[in-house]
Image (tube, rainbow, N blue to C red; front, side, top):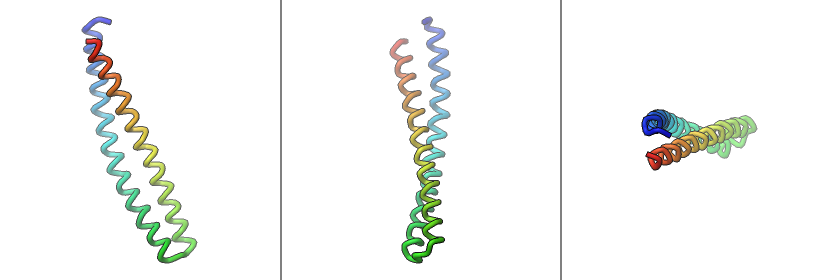
Length: 92
C-alpha cells in the first residue's frame, strides 16, 4: 500500500477513534447515573419491602445492565480502532 494511502487511512482511523473515545466518555457518564438510580431503587426496595419498589428496582437494574452492555461495546470499538491505528503506524 502506498504511503499516501496509509496516511489517509491513518487519518480516517484517528478521526473515528477520537469520536469513539468521546462516545465512550458520554456512555460512561450516563452509566454512572443509571448505576446511582439502580442503587437508590435497591435501597428503597429493601426498606419498603413492597412489590412496587421491587419492580422499580428490577427495572432500574435492567436499564443499568443495558448501559453496561453499551459501555462494553463502546470500549470494544475504541480498542479495535486503537489496534487498527497501531497496525497502520507500524506499516508506515
